[in-house]
Length: 411
Image (cartoon, rainbow, N blue to C red):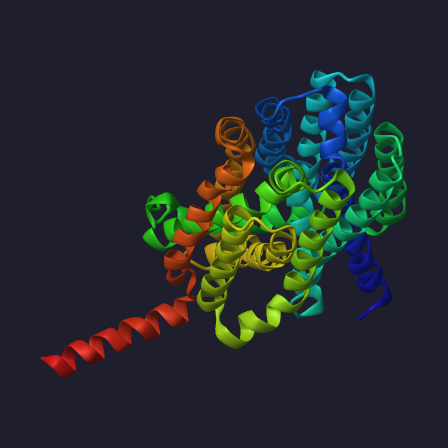
């Protein structure tokens, strides 16, 4: 590995860590924010809707921006927007102004959504240069950021540290991290990649119209998996501390501690998950992940025990950890036109993030947050049976050959 590639890889580790730090810092303070805003559960759901809307706008707009400008400016602007957004959330909470909090969350979500595309394009370039897989590790640094932010948030919550000051400091840390890391990200990477992709695809485009990717049954199965497991991950990011406070009687500091357990479980799952995927295959890993997630959610919902609920969050985190990255990988090789397939699958995931918070907020206001989680548990349970759609092309061909052989033997 050359020094330049090493610096570039390490810069991406930092860039992936920063949004994880930002989102977990906000999540651990949600009980305090709710108190400062005097907001009901359904009102918190609509405040969280700002985060989802911002994320969707960011993810949908970033592709054309990367194609035109390259990854570096998109990553820089997105990360800066995240830093400003988290500080605005703190300001809105300190002032007791829910619209300002929602605006800050929308800005933070826009920064995360737009920066994610640039980071993943840049990460793919580094992966090709290294000749080995590093993307799971990069996403692991995002989860590591959530652990660091969750632990800090838990301690600051216990110390009754002001929310506004806490989130302003986090915003400043993100800006400093961006300034140190972005200089090692070369200019024009995404722009050059898009030009090459178009040049390669032009001859094929003249051969006839492609079948729309959304008509591929395997991709739809993968989309269902992403919908369920993205909902499981997003629900924890939006609601877990409040579920523990409102549903299991934890105080705010312990509710944040439980979220830290979830974040740590996600981190462990992503750092070690690659070995399991290589050993057992994507379909088996996704089925097992969905089963673990459903079991963890079931305990949180139905068991009236603080200890059991906190322990079950480990299963929830491990189950959700590999869903999004592994299913996106499956979407990419489910057929031709990889970029369109990954974009379609990622959009389904963001729809889950978009719809989830307000729906669970409304259900939580009517039936309680624990009961509202039944919807998420049911989706994750369905994903167990959708997992075969994530098989690699070689695995699908092998299964088809086995079915043909069995049919011939019976005939």
